[in-house]
Amino acid sequence: MRLVLESHSRIYCVDEHLAYASLAGLSAHPTAAEVIGYKIPVWAEQLAQPYLKANELNLQHPESVTIPNFYRDEKIVFMVRNPLDSVSSMLNLQLENGTWIRRIGIPVVRQKATALSFARAYAEDLAYVNSSDEYEVAAAAFYWKFKNASLLEYMDRGMPVCAVRYEELVSNPEPVLRRVIEFLELNWEPAVLNHHRLPHDQLFNGRAIGNTDPTRSIDARSTGVWKSQLTPAQVQAIAVLTEALERRIDSVL
Image (tube, rainbow, N blue to C red):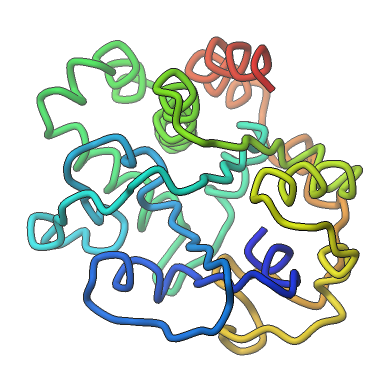
């Protein structure tokens, strides 16, 4: 979505490695663009809280990265992806010293569970994760749950949020992107369908954060990948944690 939106002539998007510091007031990212977007999945569930914690960014000393909430009713584009494919991705994305779920996801879950209010709100889910024979899978599913539960919270609060289902975006991108562009109060530009033909900065060895290939066009090849990677027991563990929330999200999308 970052690559797609910044293909619009009036939008510039700041990727994660710069976005958090910029919004925390620790650095600036100069641009002449009219509209600036920030990719901030670390804070996806925190925009209604008085303080934001950089959980995934500083797992060793999380208390050292806590900032007052900067959010002032800016527009939110919230991407929702199928939990089965999301979990599959968390299990298989390779980082420098291991998989994403081991290096990032599980430590974040454990860290957030130390907060009394969070532990109380998700007591049943945390108990299930900790007792599951599919611990990594359950932890990944729970991570999906607390991140995406914030979408409904934001809607209930009347915050300006546009929810985008990943599967709809990649299978039929134009109507989805037209809705996003209209939500941002901008005119439609066909360039957003051709991000793969345009230059992009903020790349590392030719890739965006998350190992995204900026030269790859919008396609549905990453949907349904879970079918060849997850066992029936793993699918069931994911369903226990995500099924009810997924139904609620389906009802509003």
